[in-house]
Length: 431
Image (cartoon, rainbow, N blue to C red; front, side):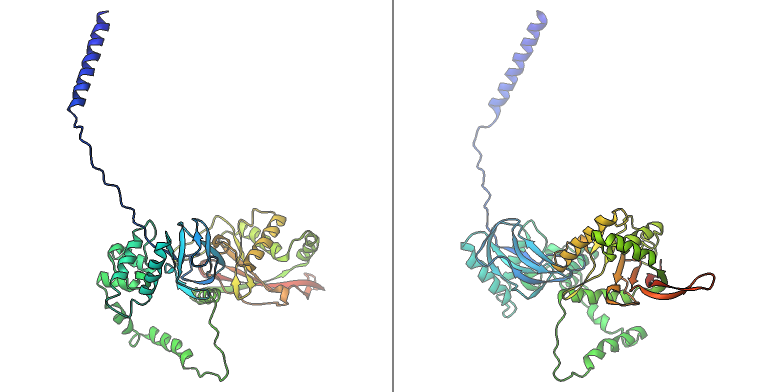
């Protein structure tokens, strides 16, 4: 009982202390400042749809100026270096201004449209677009434009800067948020970062080495030679498409990779017999060759590897067979991922789906840039031998020609006619 009383006393005393403490707290109301929500005009940027994409071409605008947009809704169709893809908006709003029209190109990260939150901001967005486009003509009017670009960069999105500018900023430890952009719409360029780092004389140094150095001296006339060629009367110059530019760039990069070529004649009688059996079930020769190549790579993983830096091998855990496909306006290599693990019929069905998406320019980046070994087949055109160009980042490519009846001598010296196919394989010197 005494313990209960003592506990009661202590409880009441604690209540007394608590009530005393509460009476000591100030009861004055506090003045809270409500945050001021300022509506800002957002910019729709040209996205990087692949790791090799540096610029994109506007195929078509799905929405028109004045249309109301919802987050996640498709706004524009962009042609990258590999495919045509829909670009979605990350915000709700109204498409106020289209900066880059259909058929025009823009660098990755450059604004292609302006998004307003309300109808009252449409006029402001139009004035902003006109002011930024004409900012280079007058020095007084160009001053407020970078401020509007900085205001947009405060939004929870990427900084308005080129990928190379961001890379240089990290290398030289420059705060890119403090760099004034001189590019279109206040975009930060590589030159802006170099000026902030104090390395402006770099361009002058790059011009001086070619005369004394032997290697640059050889490369300089090679670049100047096409300019000096006389024009043929009546000729028409047709610029490359975005895909053709990417193909040309990859071919030039492939020329710098040290490779050697090996070839081997293959008797295809057994392969032809198997193809006649599975052809009825929809299996193509390309799928059959891809499956055969994948099974061979599983036994020889070094051929599925690559040497990218000249110092080490990169062994790929997956066997992804990329197959070259010619489409309207270019070339693309859809990838049959884990080709060694899929059965022949499922692999053939997957290949048909990839070809349809490739011709419709609807391939996703992982469906064309994840190959570890490439297969190029021109046998259906009657080509019996050709040299394929090794894709950058891969260890080998197999060029498949047509299978033709050829006289073949056996071990006893007797001749017979068998179907034979020549298979040249360019391989990197590291492999």
